[in-house]
Length: 361
Ligand SMILES: [Zn+2]
Ligand SMILES: [Zn+2]
Image: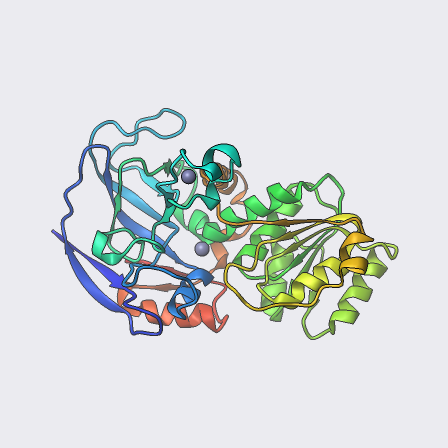
């Protein structure tokens, strides 16, 4: 049996299809038959050549598949055996070394230099190591998470990478019951941040972004108020101040990728509040910050948020299972594409025509 995969040969180059022979599954490894793989904003950045990766690659870092082969006894984090036929997702990050300064001393494995990521930092010449393919090779040690029977795979992939990233950002923000939260950006990450902030017991949850249909979706995800980019940044700030007795919100989470949003976040947050920056996965340029007024005098906490760890994936599956009936993650998927039409999926995400597109190989 052979498997088709979509190849991104290099920056701005047309996607192609390559056939792979049935891979040899070594002891400790597994093979998934792909059900869904996500098209993420990162894939657009990859195609624009804005990340340093070993082209050609098979894109697709967050995926869901059925275990078609498992060699040896593979167990999940709960100690349960992963069996053929199970529907799983997996932590796309692999090969963090647990031996370097970042892993052991700083305990920041997302900064481990040995870290490899499915669909991003593995080359297509290394095998089926990306999700835009009919099968994905789970190398030994890849952490799989079984999707419970009562979690529809469509719900999990609807949240997908954005849900996992959002969970990390919301953890860092440490939202307390009743706190006000502004979320800058209403793409897949911002939408899930809004939902998780609401589930965390935030009071006012203000979604800021465009276009209007995304703001409408943000209200369905749990935003109590939305502000569009048709307003000037001064008007949005005035609105937020008016809603918080002039103080500003307790927490701002930036998920837009716009440099200006970082400065706006510092203006919107109250004195002594927290700002989390998670939208700048690629270099979108510089922005002017006034350290006295925006940081020092405000006594503000600023956190960066990069990548995810196993526990974010594990908990994202549990959250999607428990709250997928209430939070419309499933409906965030606005386009489904087969491998031959992956370029259309990229274009739909790039043009913001689709909040979320998925590949159904
Ligand atoms: Zn390491
Ligand atoms: Zn992603």
